[in-house]
Length: 93
Image (tube, rainbow, N blue to C red):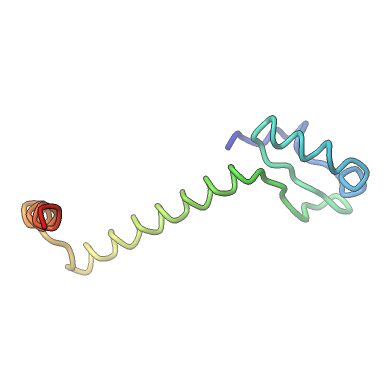
């Protein structure tokens, strides 16, 4: 996902309502999120489907890494040699 450009990607709700199709086209072309404001405060973010899915995959990966680190810290890890042997055994089955 591209970084938000403050001068182009923050729009009031009234403007969004008037040009919904234009804003969907913008997020598809730029790959950037669009922040929708109401009374000067952010109330929502519009993302393209691909960017949303990419963000979800990243979150899941980071959660897996965090879980792995916790397991290692709790003494639940195994030596590299043993892990390699387990994987190779399962692959050859």
